[in-house]
Length: 178
Image (cartoon, rainbow, N blue to C red; front, side, top):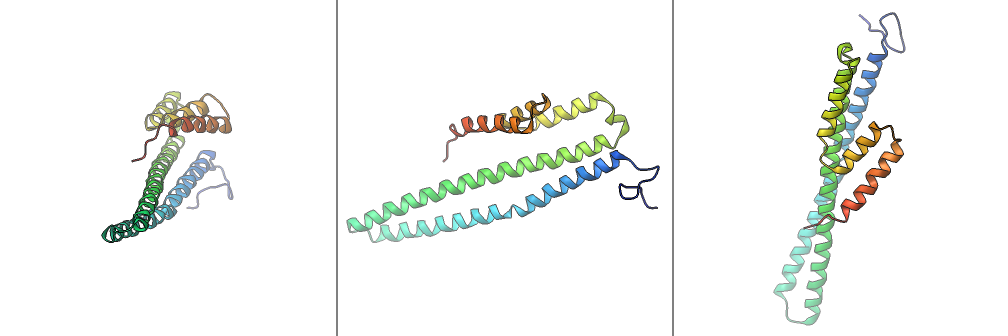
């Protein structure tokens, strides 16, 4: 039996079913993006390979340490290695955060699809409130909670993102890299 859809609507056509399809499409797109994010992992692998090479240079220079020129080269290698470690740590932090956010988005889209396709839940304000509370409770960063609250208060997407960015700028000043 062919189901009714927006291309072939009949008496069984449902905007709810169409909404669920689009929500599932969004979840699938995010899942695909996460798979493509392997580029970040490749960058990290390259960074750590470069770090290992730098460490070998430091080792080699230390073995040959007998002139001030060599000492300067060792210090340069140390500075270079430190900078590479900082880049790698930042890349790992970004990748981890991105993965968490995208996992939340796909989970939220799937849960929203389940809520929308169930008429008993769709028209029940308590179900929506519970769903919203569930979403907010999964956020670990205060900037995410601020953006969520702003959207639920009716602020524009641009304003909510600006609020998040401002808060993240403040938070980033407090980040300590190791």
